[in-house]
Length: 277
Image (cartoon, rainbow, N blue to C red; front, side, top):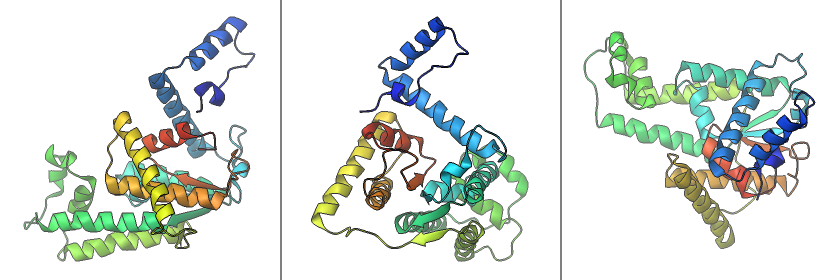
């Protein structure tokens, strides 16, 4: 099991001996809540540096990411398309452009693509049960109700405002066209080649064990999740680890990674083994 002091250890001469001792003792303190907070801060700091780095700074060497392959989780797709809001869309686009600048490969697994399309179809079906007949006034989105509904619903209501043809079929086609454009803009391919048989008994057992482990951790972590999501996470983890073929002892050796906005999944992956998260 990893310890937080394995990730961060203060040796900088900017601190006195006493200060370094205090900081390192704090990092070495065996407390899950503290470890969780530090890991989250470190993750956010890394993402900020990736977004703000202009290519000329010395803080992060993007060349270290060259020729690596990054599998995008479903939550990244939702953000990139603007379904989770314009601000998140802009941040995600800026973040992904850094990968393109570093000559990396962006991929979406067949599992994430299926989950994305199934999720869209699920919520559109929900919308069919609660149609809105009248034309919408854009001012309605300033009302409290529309600030609390599902983001996909909000995305739909804004899209349909002022349209003569606002059918849900057309809306679904609109989202799928945004998805294809997103893939084209970032040179993203879909990986349909799966190096294992999902129906094989041994593989099914591994997938179930991973899914249950993710579920258990997220329950403890207080994170929102569902059975289907846990299973898709397990499938993506197994896919990437199978492709890695044991070559994942460091960020330099590892060639394949998963990019996800799911902080709880990232913490689960960090604490479960000694390989590169």
